[in-house]
Amino acid sequence: MHPVRPYQICTRCIMDTSDPLIEFNSAGICNHCRGYEHQKQTMVWDEETRETRLQALVGAIRNSGKKHEFDCLIGVSGGVDSTYVAYQVKKLGLRPLAVHMDNGWNSELAVSNIKKTLDTLEIPLDTEVLDWEEFKDLQLAFLKASTPDSEIPTDHAITAVLMQRARQHGIKYVIMGSNVSSEAIMPSSWSNGIRDWKYIKSVHARFGTVPLRSFPRFTLLQFIFSRTVYGLRWVNILDSIDYDKARAMKVIEDELGWVYYGGKHYESIYTRFFQSYILPRKFGYDKRRAHLSTLVMSGTITREGALKAMEEPICEEGLLRQDKQYVIKKLGLTEAEFEELMARAPRTIADYPAYENTLLLRVLRACYRLPRTLKAALSKASPGGAA
Image (cartoon, rainbow, N blue to C red; front, side, top):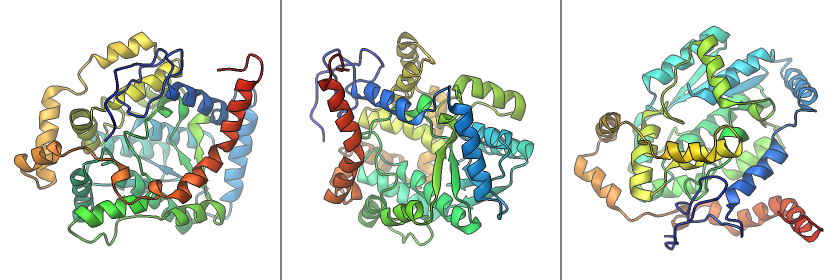
């Protein structure tokens, strides 16, 4: 548990002390704003070199796949970002294989969006359907663990499936929809452990009831091996182009018949319910605050507009009641059992065995961040260099 702090909100974005680890400088600007600027400088390609670098990347991807049926993988969920990635890779002349992981919570709109997109773009689809009894048991284990990380099993499995398909088809490039302009800000305290199989396994060992025989997984060493020995590359293509989410939505609506579903990641019924009900009511986390803060930083909306958007209901009340009944029934819970889970004291990844809590990972992470730390220190030491 984190100590209760006096309320404070960033003077630049709208992140506040609902992130227990947030830090503010003397001007009241939070660490997430500073993190956004760093990501923009290091990950988003500048306008002057963008086209040259993009063509070089496309050439490398084509060359890597010239002896294979496909030259890249894309994950598809039916959401904005992954749909626009599908649109872009075809526009760039690549030969993608689309991979979708069905965890049992797809909305009808998500399924419809995936079909229309891939049919229109003529992209083959490979769907991995998770064993429902195993996955349900894992989701329940995370609810019993009482951490805000209940979406971690899905995110981990998606990465595992993409790694498996890449090896199976001899593919070296996975094109992702992750991007700085709409996703850069997300507190680690709100969700942690996507690549942490040790964490997932420990939670399930304590609270699970059925063996995880087929659940897709990977260890930290396997992930490092896939990058360093196999040479798998994860490309955030939306950081390599002029990506504006509103413009992208208009394009996929007009050209692919894609239909909006009402919120970020709301293409999944469980995600919609988890973000709209469990996270804010049990943990005090409203992910819209992070999503909107990112849009403020990218100049997509104003800070005032973001604050006004936060006054709107997080989800339409009738839909929320419908989702609650659906989720409780699908997970095999009674109303009383669900309320007992909601009433449990919040925990964090620190309460369970995880790579995240090991000294080795902390040392590796510190080494990775060392150049950035030194650069910041030098900037502050130089005349006029203080941020």
